[in-house]
Every structure is written in structure tokens, then in C-alpha cells.
Length: 318
Image (cartoon, rainbow, N blue to C red; front, side, top):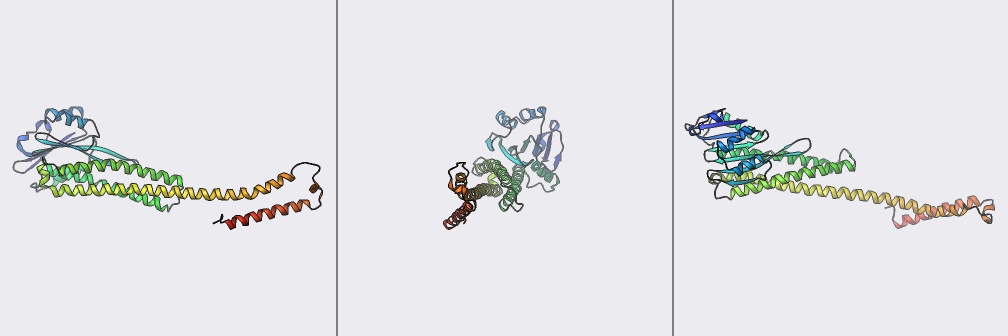
């Protein structure tokens, strides 16, 4: 589906104009949105707007790295937005063709960021401040703002894992921890390239419109810096929690092994004694003693108590 908004030379807004019937000379600037376009609608990129084949190829081949390319009358931007779906993060590409008199947005999936700005422009009465680069700023700002709830949600899940108020098992906690770590990795692979894109935009000498609104785009860049730091600190936190749980698990295992070792050590001499008196030899004088059974039991008890006291003195029970 292709949607068009045009701002006429007398600063009036026209919407829902079929692209085939649009007279672009009537507008001081216009916004065309390619929302999940069909193969037939894709042809407008080449025949109506005459965009460069490489830029069109980047639109068709999904999930290009965030970047910008300069062309004669416009700049091509590739950006990424992220949405959560079934405990996983899904990255989607949102492309922009931005010139002095037009902006074209292209996306294969429904974009809530584009819809928010589109509805806001339709409802806005004062159109003086609106132009293609302002639309670009608004959509880009929404994309970056929507990263924050995902990071906050991961932070909350990590806090629950660290506190473990529900007394979950170690296996469940480790599974949740590695799931959070995987989500943070996906976010890092999105946030960092977007941060580099904003840095390049702010330091470009070709984008005068962005330089005129430098404080706005700098604000987005600051948000991306903050997001990058949050993602990195949370990944470090996952590593600390993982190491803590592994250390605790190792400590518990050592305690179990210590108990088993003490029990084995105490029963080793008792088994030795029982083994001797379990041998069926006729010439064993102790077998004929009246109190031999009780004496042997007493000796075994004394050995067990003596070894227990010795281990305790050595500090094995601390």
C-alpha cells in the first residue's frame, strides 16, 4: 500500500491522493509511504521517483546495516526498529529517501513509528515547522524512544533473576539469564550501528538540513549513547550473575563432596574391620570369644567417634 501526503504551496495539507494521480509540482513538499508494498508498487521507486538502483536493491534486500548514502537530490537512510515477539526481539528495516522537497519511507512491516508521525501530521494545523527533514527527525526519534522499554524490561527480568524471590531452580535461572543475555546481544547489534549512523549524520558536511536542526538530532544521538551504555552494563551484569551462580553451585557441590568424603573416610576402617571378621577361616581365635561380637562393635564405634573428632578438629565441618 502506498500513502501520500502533500503540502501545497499555500501551506495546505492534502492526503489520500493516489500516487498515479499526484501532480508533484503542486506541492512544496510531500511524504510518500510505501507500507508493505506489492511487486507492482515497488516499480514506482524506479519509474516514478527514479531512485538509484543500488538504493532500491537495499530496500528489497532486507536488514541492511544502518547507513546513509548521498545522491544528487536526496539522501538514502537505512534504519532499524525493534519489536518484541514471543520472548524474542525482531528487527525490522525502515528506509528513508529524504530530499528538500520530499520524503519517501519504505518498510516491509507495519511501522507504528511511521503511523504515529503520519497521524500527528494529519492532525496538525500549524504546518510551518514541518518539512521532509522534520518528518525524518520525528520518525527517527520514535524509533529510538521505543528501544528504551525493551531495555527496561530486560533490566527488570535481571533484577528478578538476581533476587530469586520465587526460589526457582538453578537450571531455570540460568536459562532465563542466557535468554536475557541473547536479547541484549540483539539490542547491541541494533543500537550500536544506529549510534554510528547518527554520529555520521551529525558530522556530515552534506546534510545542511540536519546541521540546522543539530540540537534535535544530537538529542537522539545522546539517547543512543545512553542505550549503548545500558546494554553494555546489563551484559556485564549478566556475566556477574552467571559467575555468582556458578560459584554458588560449585560451593554447594564442594560441600556435598565434603560430606560424602567424611562419611566414606569414617566407614573405610569400619568396613576393613567388618571385612576381616567376615572371612570364614576356622583358625580365628576371636570367633570363639563369648564377648567377641560386642568387643568388635565397641572397637568400631570408638574408631568412628575418634575419626569424627579428628575431622572436626581439622575444621572439615566449618
